[in-house]
Image (cartoon, rainbow, N blue to C red; front, side, top):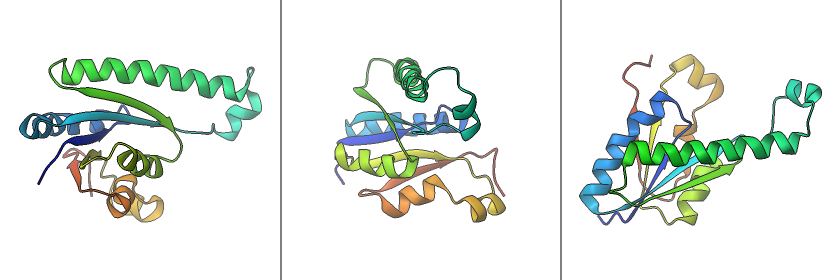
Length: 150
């Protein structure tokens, strides 16, 4: 199996960070480059829109800029400068954008964490990780948060 590009996803949670060490080891083992990605929501909750003192597009633009800076800082903090890490911030629906990014970057592997919220939450809301696994154009390496679960 050849792995040249690994897409690593983050929502900036501690759970998401648990996948970084696996991504690092895989990248080092295969000599792969990492694409560290974050998906920002492309809309705000209605209550924010209704009472926002500034334009919604301004708020969304500021959120993306903060996310870009945070992702850049996180890449250096988590992976150092020894590995080639590209950072990508996009907006939209997480599972849709993760699959799109995997296709766009020709990822050979996606590494992501799952929150493991449990059966009831999963049955009602579904799971971003599960949706990515079902739609991804490549294998998905899922790191489970041992502290969460059923």
